[in-house]
Image (cartoon, rainbow, N blue to C red; front, side, top):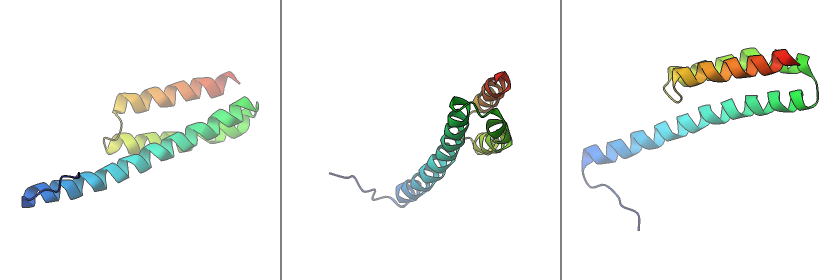
Length: 89
């Protein structure tokens, strides 16, 4: 049984949380998409293609951190780790 809010402010919070959940999921999905692409390029030994995706990774992580989808330190950590991995190839 789904609980439906009766109070107007609770209805608004439900709308807001649903919208925010969708936006957060989209930002996280974009982050996963880019990291997956980098991972496949690294597995294939194609360092140049992986290096070309690093600016896009930085853009996606910074946007997610800016909108508080992920913490700013996590964004920094993600960028740092992938830069190191790509640089090693």
